[in-house]
Image 1 (cartoon, one colour):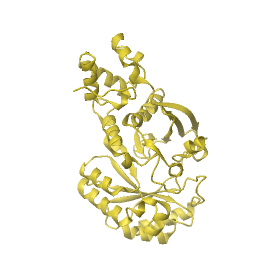
Image 2 (cartoon, helix red, strand yellow):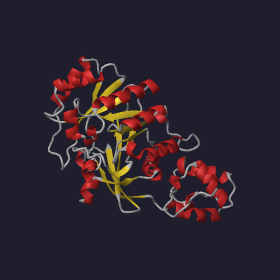
Image 3 (cartoon, one colour):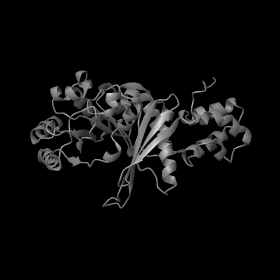
Image 4 (cartoon, rainbow, N blue to C red):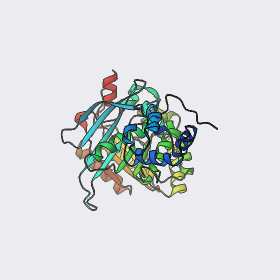
Length: 357
């Protein structure tokens, strides 16, 4: 059986067995596949010429596979130097974003975190009203290789600084569970012990609450962290912000989360964009706590990133503290995260939307 190879295929779209099969069709020895694999994911080679352990004839055959899947079109650094956002152009002209966030050494471990936020789609079909990507509409799914290429771009950059990616969050442009198969293939490839070896527990995947996919994810018993973009404690409020709530009500989402916890024993994080006067009051917090009672969960709240297409504004520090206090008094752990990269439009889709408009 021959590997279906075409000019649109990227080196990062191949898993190790695909690569081995392709080399067999090229009448190359199987051990070359492992050499290429390790060159890609351990040394971060991005052109055939860098594979100096391969014969020139094989490097020439590989040339078309290295047609750049993503090309950096623009990058912006925050004023504090802790956040970099890169706008990438895909081969068909669509644009996506990825953001690198640097954090100071952890108080307890002393380790520095280098968190990468990557995209899984160009645009998004979910239509969340406060999200710049949702305001763009859906363009297309990314291939597994296009998802991986974002990580490899930053892995190469950090290697030059003697640093490494420590965490990957799939919270950039797009709904990962809408592009489920390609997203999971990308995670599996990055997790491969013979390649990049990125630990499953260092990934976090975020969804607006596609219930069937949450249940599928639970059945697969992956060690990847799950985050749910909730943002409201009642259906009327949520449907005004997240249209997907018309199809999957809050009770449906929470029941799917209970199933996930039962299947995996893993905690669920609920993401909450704090919007002034909308969902940031102690009353809303208490209503949320009653919904989440008994769940192995954590609320991750962050003041809203402003976007041109949404009139709501971020909560202030005092209101955020009162929201957190009300949740914790009701027994629900909560963290208030600081906004990162506001001066460079680091919220997902903001830069792409500005360039595309």
